[in-house]
Image (cartoon, rainbow, N blue to C red; front, top):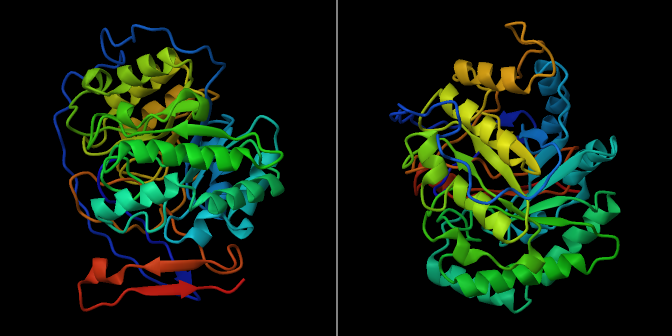
Length: 400
């Protein structure tokens, strides 16, 4: 998604910093019929796949692991086969993926052979620091020259050592937007060359079985995402982050808009790749059961490798009480048993969020938890962004 939204969930001892700034823009959703958009079938057949693996983004750390079982109970026992987390993009040390952060997800993945671990991986540090285009261009060219290869080899080595060599890496997600330092727009040629360097470096590690997911945000955004595609030899899955928001007012428009859902299916079929939905959910159009039904029917038709709804407010259905009608549709369509009209397990209290007001907020890029569960992390806290220029930025570290 194209603009900034960020979660700061940070604890040192008993101190908690929380700030919530946000708004809801309710847009017209007339005509978003539950049939997933009349005439919305792509002209090319989808790449043959088995049943879609279902999961959710529930939290980036051990809390997310614990919530997987609770969400499964709420769905009447539906098996959640996909665990989804994010590497922080503040400093290289964190992008390298310390085992203290990844260990709980690795243990969850290894507990059942058919599970899948999906890890959003930044391509550059300072990934949400509003780095200007000229500097981004320089960083992409340095990356394309191999300067940052060692960071990604280290990440690959750690994933293999943790026993999750088949991790799906959503590398440089939403590259067609303006939010992240790892965006493509300032230099698409350098971006594609840099992606290729990263994939080559990670595939050089013995024992790896990684799959790399190219996942733009839906629509054209700052640059057509097809201009960022690095090539069939270094992409395994063609994903898309797709939230219910303008400029598409209805689900049918989300399918048919330039570089929308139909384009994803067509493009993937042309390149012989399966599709995925690493991030999707409600947003500016509010509680919209027609969108929810349309999206789930679209996925049933086109069989993505996996789909993980972003489950916190305003996007979610289980941890967000603001979307009761969409929640009912989601549960009805994905439940393993008959809907009894009430939750079979209580939803947890949502984590405090910090939202930066902008044209189209994005799901949080998580920062590591400090303390015993994630030893040795450093977290940069942009206090000046939150409270004004009188507040200096700080970095807090917990020793390993």
